[in-house]
Length: 232
Image 1 (cartoon, rainbow, N blue to C red):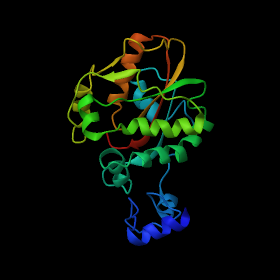
Image 2 (cartoon, helix red, strand yellow; image 1 turned 180 degrees about the vertical axis):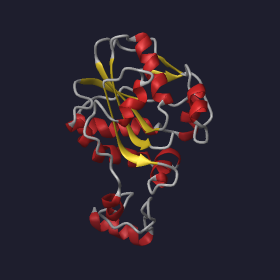
Image 3 (cartoon, rainbow, N blue to C red; image 1 turned 90 degrees about the horizontal axis):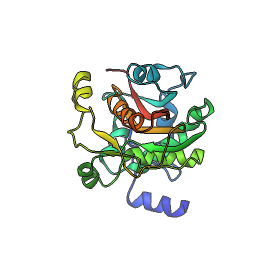
């Protein structure tokens, strides 16, 4: 396999999505130098941290974690763009496998019944062909053995991208856009892990939690996103 990978790299060199350096046969998507220089989030608790406090203003959430600091000027910008828009969802899966064990050791997703990715609208799913949150969820599933259930939540309203919206606009834009499917299993009293690619204001996650709690008042919610933004 290594021989063929090396041979193919000679014909069609692959490049690091962060620094654009040529990758060697043992590297995938991101070079080892960039991986070593990534600023990983290492908060000491899954039950009291900046991410959790961001959501606590709206909802009672039992635990939360995130792994990579992100903003539009960071070295990781191209990574998240590649995962989300340029058909590199496996990169999200691999990063989740690499990053989530830290949070698992802190108790995130402990006793979780299932992993629920934040859904895309049907229009966006048809255009993109995949849901990046679902691929990240699959990476966590491979590490934890917790099954992914992408058929709990549905996005009932298509909205334009939130990339250039401020905090107030994001909250207004995500009101009541998610709901729970009628045939969803009963999750009352159970723990779930809600997963998305990036959190900024937390508006999208909070509307998902609203929908889950309206249907399952006693559900226990843990939250994880691959990326976390400082700038709100």
